[in-house]
Length: 92
Image (cartoon, rainbow, N blue to C red):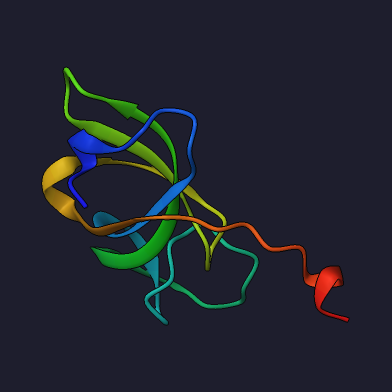
């Protein structure tokens, strides 16, 4: 799905890459680990879209693994798809 064709008001997620400060295990810093900082590197993740700016071609998203928020250009996101929210308590 093209990021420019998503419907406002619906939830979407995508894979992304961003250049950021990483720890020795390749996780975005800062985090609550005892791992030393490695330096700036490329981080790839999967995140839920929070905002989209069509003029600047940027999205703000929240990474599912680290819970960190990133602003990423359209060119660095892919596999955009609609999110179906499920309550884990409904599966019991």
